[in-house]
Length: 252
Image (cartoon, rainbow, N blue to C red; front, side, top):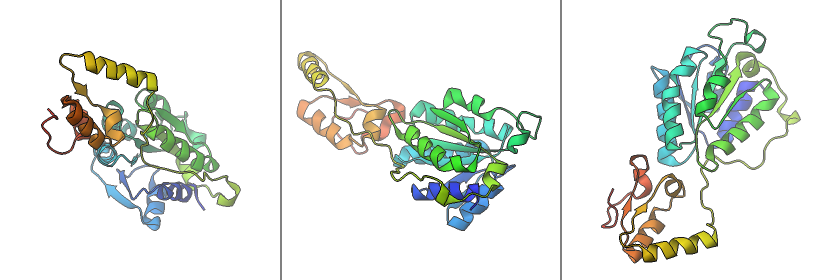
């Protein structure tokens, strides 16, 4: 099994059905492996589109969106959608190809420190240096992308790592996998009591519902609380989906 086949297998185990791609240097092993595995390749005309597709999918479904681009300039071109995912807390994984490991830092084609460039707008960024690392890198990427405030993650995987042969039986696979944002957590009881006290004493209370409420899929509970307390709800423009049907208490 090649590193690319191992990568695709890990994506498929997590329910990934498509990858938004602008094909280019270093991606061929991934694309061929994805096609053989039945993962749809959405081939776009520029890298921004690939990352925006992954971002939009993640925000609409609350699941991880995957995009892949080639090295160098293509990597930077994908940052538009990646930065949007950073601002809007969307769980996106950007996979970028690269020249062989032995050529990195030696003036290879489109050679640049892609991990360093991605770090300011990603929750996590990693250069995968061996095929045996791929399952763990994917596992950690999905965990980080969907935990806490969701957000984008980056993996640079060089051509020789994708092409290398590996024995999957010799690799410890993660048994617990997921690709959805899990945001249902219990609030601190003391903070809840304090919030109730503040609402009871407020003359004109207002609920501002944001990203946490959206990814918790808490719209029904939120509207129920607003109806009982007669407190109106507003959302930031990027969290409009918190409440997805009309209500006299939802102001937009």
